Structure formats: structure tokens, C-alpha cells
Image 1 (cartoon, rainbow, N blue to C red):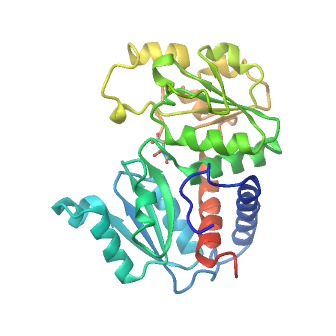
Image 2 (image 1 turned 180 degrees about the vertical axis):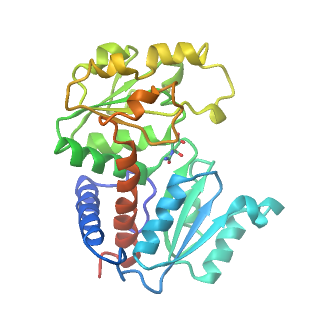
Length: 305
Ligand code: NCD
């Protein structure tokens, strides 16, 4: 594995290796007085973010620093990108400076793939357009494994704005590969059209989907990617597809509630549900650091150290 661009590219055993290593990262660092490992000392990781991000960027930065790498944050808006520099020229600049790993978030699907043609270092996709967000799916899978004791045979409902969601796409491929049954739930307008080949079931009825669900993953309604009216009003959306306390009561007692963040409280998730002990939202954030440490370690050392 040289780059991490999608979860589709991962074999089941590679995905399991990353999840196992994630657990090892968590225990290696949590038990230490100094929460840092020397593994990537002397290596440079560049964070190249062309889209706003709080948790993913800081998570990658924290992960790289916990492995003792040098981290350079390159915020495209405050750089010569705002003067019209192309991705290729930015990439060639980073290449000349000798980046060992480039973490990229970009509004265009496929940008991380292009980047691999211009840099020698490992490319880690931190979200490209509506295409893929592999480390988010890996941290979701890790959270499920921790909370549910496994993924094989579990039923996961992915609910809401699937059309615009790279998180949904990456989870669909990863979770189905790991043996989960994946059900997409949402209004027909927010489900992509050509999905006959996807390993999923489809439902338009959230209430009917809750009883046998082990994990529900709520997606943010992505207003910034909507150039059309996909549903009548925010209230109507919440009434049909929002997870409130009544709906939480329809799920099995062990079932968990997930959200990648940022949340629209009161829309796809009621505030009381987001703050309930059944929600794993802050755990997902914490696990994100361990997952990104595992991935950085694997890609930047080729698993050698
Ligand atoms: C997601 C993203 O940016 O794709 N957020 C994240 O990485 N935590 C989901 C979203 O923006 O809704």
C-alpha cells in the first residue's frame, strides 16, 4: 500500500490490519506519560487543505505529531493558491521540499489521485468532493468494532444525504467488505441514482429500519453542495429522517448512534440524542487520531519499523 485514496482499494485483510494497528496505537500512547512515539522522527507530513475543516485537519496534525513527524499546515486559502496557482504547481513545490506524506482535502473528486502523479511521498485522501473519505470510514469501523464487538453480521443504517456524502461512499465499501449489512435510508432525492451495483439495501422509511439496526450513521445535510431544493423544509426533513428520542427508543438497546460531524443539531439529529450515552460522536473523534496514526505509520514506513 503506497497511498490511501479510497476504501474500495483496500482488501479485507489490509483494512483489518489498519484496524488492529489502530488498537495498538491507542494502547501504546494512552499508557505513556509522554503521549508521543518516536516512529516518524525526521519525516515531514504536509496537510494540504483546499476545503474548510476542523476535526479532520487537526486530527491528522495530532496524529502526525504523536508519531514525532514534522507537520506543515498548508491552508490553500491563505497561500498562493488564492493567486491562481494550480494543484500541479503546488504539488511540485511540496515535492521539491521533500514531503514524505501529503494529506489532501479537495473539493474535486479525484484530486488526490492526480496528486500521486506529481509527488513521490505517500498521498492520504482526507476527503475529495463527494467521492471518498477513507480515514473517516476507518475510524467509524474502528468505533463499531469497539462498541459492538465486531462488524461481521451487524446491520448498519446510513441515513440522510447520501448523494453528497463521501463519508457514506467510503463506509459502504469498507463496512460491506468487513461483512456488515449496509442499508441506505433517505428521501429518494438524496439517494444517488446509479447504485444497482453497490452492496447495499435501500429504504425510504426510517421508522421501519430501526428495529434491527446495530448502528445508525447520520449524515450532515450538506447545504453547501446543494444547488437545488432536495426536500421541502428543514422541519419536514427532521420529521421524516431526523433521529429524535422517540426513534432512538425503537432501536435495540445495544445500538449506537454515529455522526461524522459537523452536526446540524435539530435537523438530522436531535440535540438530546447527540448528547445521549448511546451516541459515539466524541469517541469517533478520539478514535480518528489513532486511525490516522496507524495509516501514517503504515504508509510512511512501509510497515518496516
Ligand atoms: C465530513 C466531511 O468533511 O466529509 N466531515 C468530517 O470529515 N468529519 C462530513 C461532512 O462534512 O458532513
